[in-house]
Image 1 (tube, one colour):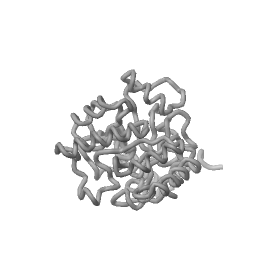
Image 2 (tube, one colour):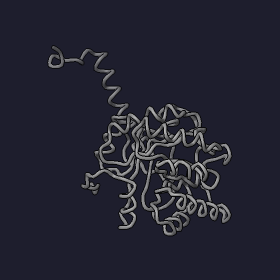
Image 3 (cartoon, one colour):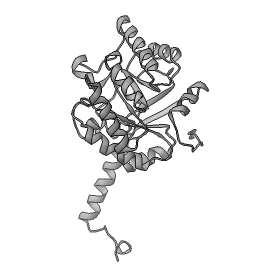
Image 4 (spheres, one colour):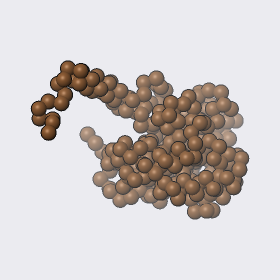
Length: 272
């Protein structure tokens, strides 16, 4: 039975804060095109992330690094047109903000002006703090992202769980506080121990969204293609598949081919 919200008001950064304050869990999923975004929005998902994970599931790249700002803007614009209720967040892609606060502000402004999105998401803590501060000063809301940050995969060397050691856990907690103090309205925590996710969620006033960060965070996010079973070669512990859309689609496509080959499509009622 569905328990999705009947509240059709537009989700805002303030409403997410209110959801945390009344202990209402926040649902978040990715979407990259108009048709899928419309379906996700109608389902009652609170936040739609136009994620740089499109680099993997849409473009076929091994990492998120190759996707460009122009590509993210194209997808963000398509998603935003379809959404009536959910908060729309667009990822800042690799190379659009790292190490250059002036470029970071310019990239963020382009995303907001050209997509119509509600806010952006950035990976990193203290090392991107100047860019975060400048972007927020420009009036652009930011969702942070800590833990496993896929744009830094070449530094990490693997997609293993992050912050298992005390020194890294303390840095993550410190970075989370810095992002909150800088004005971020929420933070995604990816692939970290559940107890660390619980600690950060309890210590911060802003919403914490987890992906592989345990059940104690204020909400959860998954990649749409993964949770629908469109992808089958990615099976981390935190992923729950809610459908096997790959098999459903393959069966339908094979039936279509058969119907065309045997001249049973179109039939008399399907022609003019």
